[in-house]
Length: 198
Image (cartoon, rainbow, N blue to C red; front, side):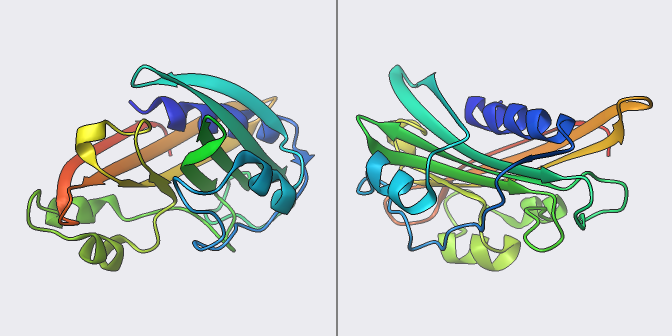
């Protein structure tokens, strides 16, 4: 459903299959990078060279993506049997930040969220503050063209897990929630998807 989320899933799978790959990192604070203001060079200056770079087309705009990822078979997972991994992806339009998303299955900073609470979110009534209170800190934030210009700003919640191994086969699970807000900071759109086996 979300092309950006699919890229994070791909990154996670790649590092997980390597069993222990990438350079460990700590998720930056919410104030570290500002949508519509932070530049590509500022992100790289603070986090170092990205593990991967790519491009994607979103709402007719070509975006640049940079990703940081880490997986450790010996790390402590949020759930038993899960191979712990984390990834952070940034999206740029003309070198200006327009989206950022984090996913982790580590216990220390897991990005899991309670999708049973989605039913409590109402378009045109629930505010951004109420969404955060209900679901906790979001794992992603986006502005146009990551979301349609008519949608305003959006937040995302994403959780991805991998279980199994090379001999038993890998099992993947993903769930993603994207919530857009109008100019009054009320929910204007809700998109949710899940796939795979837990």
